[in-house]
Length: 110
Image (cartoon, rainbow, N blue to C red; front, side, top):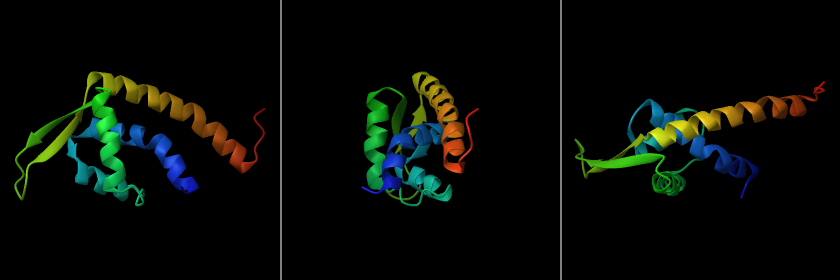
């Protein structure tokens, strides 16, 4: 597994929760949105297991709906527990982002 893949694996759930918090999406649409943000190496195959984990943890819920073109689609929306988890993710991300950037740029923490 590449370094990029390992890094993405750690933050993908937070990214997915964030997208779903803004609008209901179905799996393929979520893949397209992630790619539009520059995460082009995130495939549908890696998204569905994350969606399943998030659903089992009751952070999102899914609803089958008729599609205007083709088979039914499962649309996901965030739950209240998912919103709380997203808030925590954002706090954790902010607490990690700045120190990592400083370390990479060679700045002193003092």
